[in-house]
Image 1 (cartoon, helix red, strand yellow):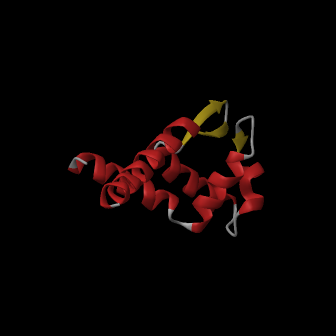
Image 2 (image 1 turned 90 degrees about the horizontal axis):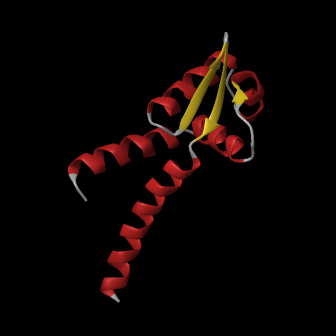
Length: 101
């Protein structure tokens, strides 16, 4: 795995590694339509401004997408991107195990 990919994956895992951000991702997994920050507050132990800050981190790392509608921002999970990144890591882990067998 190239260093650039490792750095990218490390940032993704760091974004997912905080309990409130992971809670937001899990909540978005259950949503079929984009959600605003206020709708997502129930899953975290932080206030609305904290949720917004966590969503900003997740957006910067490509985990979620944001759609602006006037003053409102609606967030959705980038399912394929996150799944592909985690699958690539899992495949790499499993390939080493299979080679050792």
